[in-house]
Length: 531
Image (cartoon, rainbow, N blue to C red; front, side, top):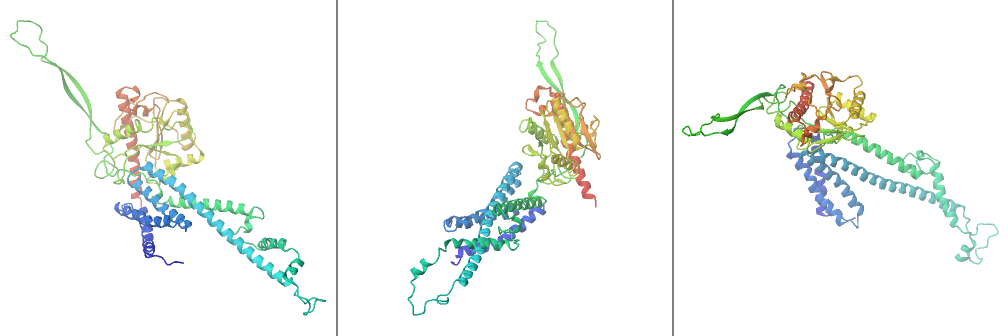
């Protein structure tokens, strides 16, 4: 073997030094939430710097050492994939981060599976060759012992007798080619006389006596899949593989916004009269004016909860933002009015009216995606709407129950256009909260009075009635159901309803979002104070 070149030795040494540093930095990033951003950026980016010369070396030796190149590419993929997910998370691109994590994990599964199959085939073939070589050696020794020695049999020719040529001896012996198949048979018989436990050996007893190779492949595939997903579940307990919702840092007071009425004098016409004119007419008022009453919201206090600088919530972070996340479900049109035009309008209005930091775009998550959020870092509220059916599985019901009860979440639902959806949603909540009966939400409740006091529940179209329903548990609303298509009023054209209706719909949206975030902040503060 050729000695490593100086460049290769330096690359190996640099990689050996960097590997434990990367692991330490990775664990620190998972556990220390206040880690300076530049540190993981610099540390994880160094992996790309080291991966580049390794990939160049693998490319140069792709013909002479193809497996080396594939191994280098596989290891480099892990670091590049991790860097992409980390940067998307750092730049606050949640959709890109989630997509990169999901597709990257799937690719990692198949890369690992390919290496497992390759290793299994090599190991299985090695054990087969060893067994056949041992059987062949045993067969040859047995054959040599049983073959008679020339001149030793009775009546044999004397030493002085005529010599037998090799050609005549070979022609006198029977054809030995069929006998050469016996080592394989003996190898199999030898393997079956003892119990083999090694899973890499196709003759392991638990693979059975027929279709051993197929049984071995299926067993290894199942074992790899289980171990892979167990590892993923274990990593999901860490921050790096979990999805996190963070409240915006700050504080404020939970009370009504100050509403003032400002009188504005608008001059419509102005007359100039010559008092010495010979024309007589009734002199109108010098200024024809109209009094315009404008209702103005004054931020007489900081909107939020807890002690802190700026509008926000106790327990929030500098990276935290209020996000409006739509809940995806099967069977219907969960994406009714989704994205730009409705949800985004509502999110922007919330930011303008509360002065709190908001996300740049709206998002959506499936019900099962809620499992990725840890307790204390789950979304305070999920928005759900539609006008068709709602289909959920038993597993999804359990996830929703865990989200509402253990993660202190809340559902904000709106009937998007049918009596069918009304019945479907009530049936869903009957499964999620079977011990709670829905009740009309009073107009004097905090969710209808803070930050805005609503004179009535604004209704675009009464698909499910004219009263909002709520599910109340442990001193808070875990679900608020609006029966009258509130997201239509959030659209750009406001569904053609009167200005006071869509304005009240924005106010109600602000109230529900604020209520959920404030309650979540209170719960987090109480948990921190509990010994």
